[in-house]
Amino acid sequence: MRWELICIGVVVGWLFYKYFIVRRWGLEESGVGGGRRRLQPPRGSSGWPVVGETIEFIASGFTSRPVSFMEKRKSIYGKVFRTHILGRPIIVSTDPDVNKVVLQNQGNVFIPSYPKSVIELLGESSILQINGGIQKRLHAIIGGFLRSPQFKARITKDIENSVKLTLSSWMDRKNPYLPLYLQDETKKITFSILVRLLMSVEPGEDLEFLKTEFMEVIKGLICLPIKLPGFRMYKSLQAKERMLKMVRKIVDDRKSAMEKNESKGSGLPNDVIDVLLRDTGESDGSQQRLPLDFISGNIIEMMIPGEDSVPMIMTLAVKYLSDNPAALACLVDENNKLKKRKDESCEEYDWTDYVSLQFTQGVISETLRMANIINAIWRKALEDVEIKGYLIPKGWCVLASLTSVHMDEENYENPEKFDPWRWEKTGATVNSNKFTPFGGGQRLCPGLEFSRLEISIFLHHLVTTYTWVAEEDQIVYFPTVKTRRKLPIIVTPKRNEA
Ligand code: HEM
Image 1 (cartoon, protein in one colour):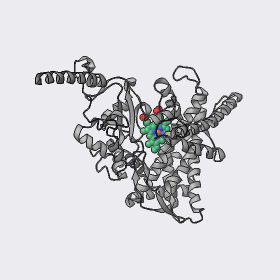
Image 2 (cartoon, helix red, strand yellow):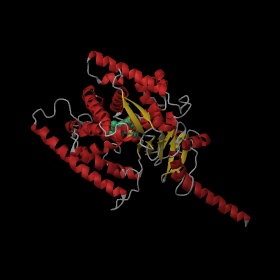
Image 3 (cartoon, rainbow, N blue to C red):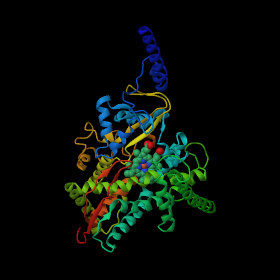
Image 4 (cartoon, helix red, strand yellow):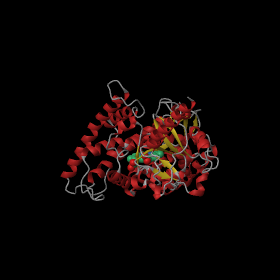
C-alpha cells in the first residue's frame, strides 16, 4: 500500500511538473544561444488562490512607502521576482539593467500590456497600444513636433498666459486669503494647454465640454471592464464617443481647409492634428496618409498620459518645497535673478530661459524621482526572453518598476530625502537607466521636454509672484499618485520683490 502511494505520488508530481511548470512557464530545455541550459523563471510566490498577492500590493499603495511591496520580495527573492497581482502572474523587475532591456525592446519581443479596463478605454489603434512600424511612425511625428524649437517658442507664450491667468485669479476671489486647492488649480492650467497643443481649441464652451467629458472618460481607467448600461466602463465609453464626434469634426474641417488652401499645409503646424494630417507616410515608406478616424481617436487617447501627470508634478513639487525651506530658498533665489534680468532688459522670456535654470531643473527631477507618477511600465513577452540569466516566459507579463529603481539606496543616497542638489553632480535632465520617469527606448515619452518646460514656467511665475503656506497633507499612491486633500495652500502676493 505504501509502495503504491509512492508510485502515485511520483506520477502526479511528474505530471504537475510537466504540465504546469514546463508547459505553462515554457521551461523546456531549449537553451538560449544554442546551449542546452535549463532556464529558470525568477523565484517568487503566487500568493493566495485567485487574488494572489493583490491585496498586499494595493495595501502598500495606501502607505507612505508604496515601494515596500517590492522591497520585501526583493530582499527574499532578489531584484527580479515572480508574483500574482491584479488577476495575472507577473514578473517584477526592480533591476535597472533588466528594465533597460525591457524598455529598449530590441527585436520587438515585448508589447504593452495594460490592465483590461485601460485596454478597453484606449481602443486598439491608440499609440499606447499599437506596435511595430505604425507606432514608430506616430511616435516620430509627435515627438518631432513637440521637440521642435518653433513649437516650444510658441507654446511658451501660451503656457505663460495660462499660468498668469490662473495665478491672478487667486487674488480675484471674494476672500483671496482663503486656502486654494493647488491640485485643482494646476489642472486648470495644464488642461487648456494640452487641448491647445493637440487640437487648438480655445478656452470657451468647447473646451469646457471636452473637460467634462474627459473627466468622465478617465474615471473608467481603473474599474470593472463591464460594458453594460449602468456600469462605470459603459459611461466612460459613452463619454469617449461624444468627444470623438467633436474631435472628428475638427479633424474633418481642418482637412477641408488644408485641401482648399493651395499651400497644403506649409509653414509651421499649429498642433498635433496638423502634423498628423500633413504626414504623407514617407518616413516608413508606406506613402499613405493616416486615416481620419485613427487621427481623431489618437488625439483623445493622447490626453490620457498627458492630462494628470504634469499638474501632479507641479503640485508635488510645491509640496516637497513647502517641507524643505532650504530648497525653496534656492529655487526662489534662482528664479528671482532671472526675473530681475528680464525686468531690467525689458526682454520677453524665451523657452530656453526657463529650461536653463539648473536648480529648478533639479527640483523637477527630484520630484519626478520621488513621486513616480508612472510607477511602472507594463509589458507582455511575445516569446521566451532571457535577461541577465532570468527567464521571462512567453505570454507572461513583466512589470518594470521605475519606483523601485528611483527609491533604491544602491542608486541614490538617502533615497527618501528630497534633495534637489543631488542633480548638480549628474545634470538634472539626464535620462539614465537609473532615472526613467519618462520611460525609455522606443516608447520614451514624447512629451518629456514639453512637460519640463511647462513645469518650469509654472514654478517660475509661482515663486516670483507669491509666497505661500501649505496646510498639512499626505501623498497617496493608489490607484494613482495624488495628495489626499488636494494640497490646500494660502498665498500672499509678493508685490514689491525682485
Ligand atoms: C510629468 C509628465 C509626464 C510623465 C512622467 C510621463 C511619463 C511617460 C512614460 C513613463 C511613458 C512610457 C509608457 C510606456 O512605455 O508604456 C510615456 C509615454 C507617453 N507619453 Fe508621457 N509623461 C508625461 C507627460 C506627457 C505629456 C504632457 C504628453 C502629451 C503631450 C505625453 C504623451 C505621451 C505619449 C503619447 C506616450 C506614448 C508614447 C509611445 O508609446 O510611443 N506624456 N509618458
